[in-house]
Image 1: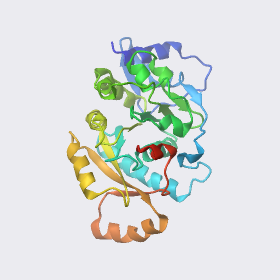
Image 2: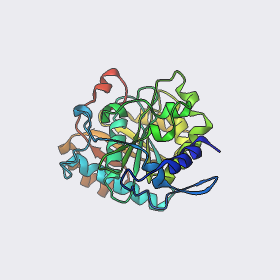
Image 3: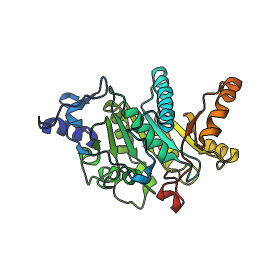
Image 4: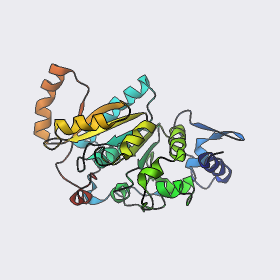
Length: 300
């Protein structure tokens, strides 16, 4: 019996009535040694944290649901949810060819947008074990997290946090490790991400850039699809081509163009779609960087 199954079985045994009931993803059930384990038993055990994004994080403002950035991520959400009806699609990797193109920014805002739907839970997992940033964006502790679970230093229910008032859960990267790629190669990683979609309708994995480590490539073989983030006026066609060629599996489900200015974006929409009918999606963002970007990594 894997540690994932053990954690979920233990969670069911420990779950009491001290917290309000949590509605799991539709049809979410996990098979254990003693039968079927309701997903709600696990979700009720998670520590609740407030939604308190860092001021510089550029996350969606819940008080301004109709602001252009929020609308853009809702459009991306709609496309992904439609695609999910056509093919098995629950765990997706968000990556970029190079650093500082906005992968973590897109991963975080897409997760928030998905979690705003009342009928599904979304997990945002920080799998960038080299330069993690999700814990900084949401101002939660980095550890215990993903690496602590894989190393056997923390149970699964201790490394996932539930955001108060939202259908959003966060799994930070965890303690620093010297061998990220070797850790991601553990069989336990594949078991974990095979089971998590039974608890969450969407599992969004923030990963390192494709051309700077093999981590994203490996995660892409585990996930159902890969979403590539590129930055306008920065990412070159050659870089995108090399990133695509580096993938072991051709499971790229779309490209998000980050960093477009408002006027530039909307003036091109009509021509772009009427001329090409292409499914590539441009995501409007402020042309700004998070503090992590100043260190040269893709953390915005």
